[in-house]
Amino acid sequence: MISAVQFRNFKALRSTEVSLGAFNLLVGPSGSGKTSLIQAILQLRSLAEMIDQPPVGPLTPPSAGPQIVFLFPPPFDGVRVSLGCAADELVCNRLTMHAPEPLARDAWIALRPQLASARAYLFDHYAMGRPSPRLAVPELASNGGNIAAVLAAWETNAPDAFRSVQADFCRWNPEFSKLRVAPGSDDTVELVAQIRGEEDGVTGANLSQGTLYSLAILALAAMPDPPSLVCLEEADRGHHPRQLREVRDALYRLSHPRDAGVERAPVQVIATTHSPYLLDLYRDHPEEVILSQKHGASARFQRLSEVPGIEGQLRDAPLGDLWFSGVLGAVPEE
Amino acid sequence: MKLAILSESPADEAALRVLAGYVLGVPIDRIATNLRARGWPSVEQILPFVLRHLHFNTGTELLVVVVDSDDTPIHTPDHDAPGYFQPQCRICRLRAVYRRTTRNLPPVHGRRRVLRAIGLAVPAIEAWYLCGRDTSVTEEAWVTGLASGRLPYTRRELKWRVYGTDRPSLPFEIRRAVEEVSRHRGDVRRLENDFPSGFGSLARDLRAAPGAG
Image (cartoon, one colour):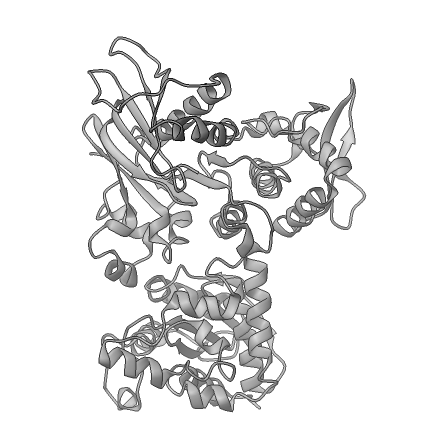
């Protein structure tokens, strides 16, 4: 949905551009701009929700203040949407479109609902384990805290999605034979995972951190009406290294649904990680990996596929080891 | 026969279990399950630890190890000459690791050492899955391509031919792997003919094990 983002003076992203594909895995040290990219997309989403018709104007070089420019794939490849503000302002909340009329107006009509549907997630297992009030609109919260209510709604309204989550949850966590949602007090619902071969169930509050994160990833992958763009921070968090292949597959189900036998529009995925084990799994797709390079107080992005000689290096070492070694950059400065 | 498999994924392991059963012709008692490596050169690095673990802590009789060749040289009969070592050949390298590791191990569990069966998937295990179904995929085609600088296919293309995508889900990959190797129905002669170096080495090692059928 977004083909590239250009940054000028936005936090550590002083002057850099990142092209985005259907699936994008960002790796790099803290402060290298991974979260800043997601924040920029969320700011665009917020403004898209509010602005019916943005001002249209030429794309001018930025003043001292920050500027973020979004580019789009065809048929909107002639359109730019910029966010900017003055040097003394804290938030880039001036949205401007840059395209000849009437393309700008038509583009905004088409792009606005997509941009407004972008979502970012950083799961919180404490919130996920608690009972959740039932929902009128079953949309997964950014911390996953309402996952019990979302699944309860799917059980009624989207039974295929619910059954998919149930089946994959038990496959990922074979100690459980069934996942269900049980009514709690005050019109709440809570997760219950049935232990295989036993009558006992484990409530959400007592499920392990990793088990809850696996459920959240599966819920993302099974969303019956997914957003156009999903950002996921720390995609590896809480998962055993061997389970990361399943995490990768679940995220591919969003970005490449046809490859997984799912008929729906692809969801653009932007995920971050600090795990060399997750990175290993992208050896055959270096174009899906973005290195966040930090140099002093500034940072820039680089596609792994654009690193000179990367194919030869990948023959001799796991990708995660190459990254950890420092030869690819995107490591903390020492 | 008590067998362990060191592989890169559950899909590879499932396929190798079927193929090893076909070659051995005896019931397999798979122990020490879930040995995993993160691809070459991780296999070479962890093999000594895996061998010592299997030797001292289990009753394993035979360890099966299969790695992808990528674009390294394949193992040829010349490499089997006494004292010969081809430093880029992954079979030669794994055999050398095996020799160094097992040389001074004391007998345990009623056997001197865990035996090894080492295979080389040229260039990747998906090539074996296509054997008999896609006649353009053979070791000879790959070696000719390497020599001419025009590779007949890529790893990614092999995945497409097997899975219809280069991003298969793990359950689908396991299912396809087992489906494809099960086509051979116990007769691996075609695999040995089309992949005489990589699969042939594995089959010869397996057949040399005492108790093989």
